[in-house]
Length: 84
Image 1: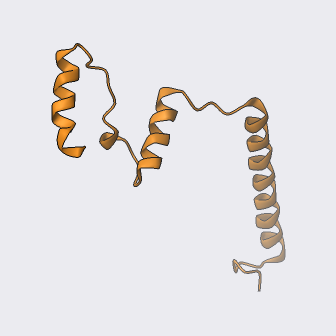
Image 2: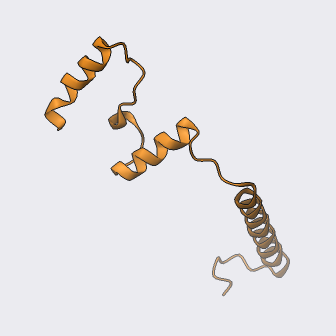
């Protein structure tokens, strides 16, 4: 199939189809990552409001936990990352 790629692109252009995606130009190591990147770019992947809210809550919880951990280390004078 890879050998026919140039021919297919030429045939698409001859028929007036110039707006197609060359998956090889997308970011990602595997074909699945390239397809996922293309779907995000095309707007086909839209997280639900519930998913967005859960993501925001999670990020806020992580931020608060990191601030608390940093503050505790500063107050106790413990500079080592392991806390020991």
